[in-house]
Length: 123
Image (cartoon, rainbow, N blue to C red; front, side, top):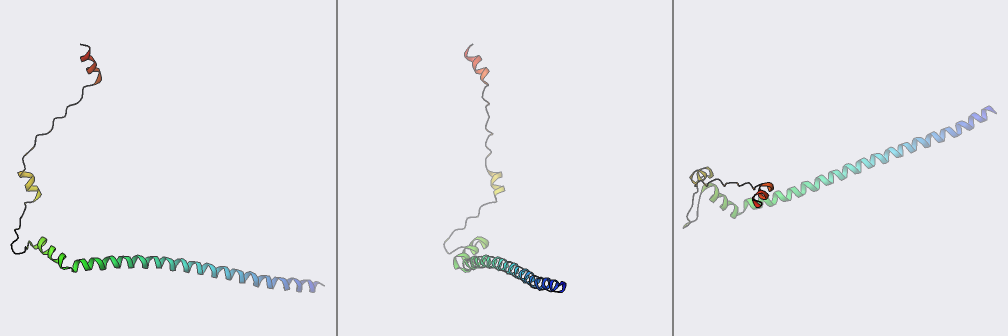
């Protein structure tokens, strides 16, 4: 009879142990899939940001390649002009400040305190 009890206990313990191992393996697999999905979503977001940045850079490149931009840079940096145009060269801001007339400092008049105003009324 002891043998039957031991066999009966072993008969229950083995399937329960196998079931627990399968459940733990299943849970670990689910966690691994969730981590993979989170990593995939993060990489998708990074890829979207990179695509947007790439589009902006392509637009900037088109602007930089345009004839208008090249002409503007030639005019601004090298001082070139079209035929018939007059180039006006202004002095540096420091020189303009030195040559500008000095304005007198404004006089700040402080208002009289209330007690003095009352004293003037009753005099």
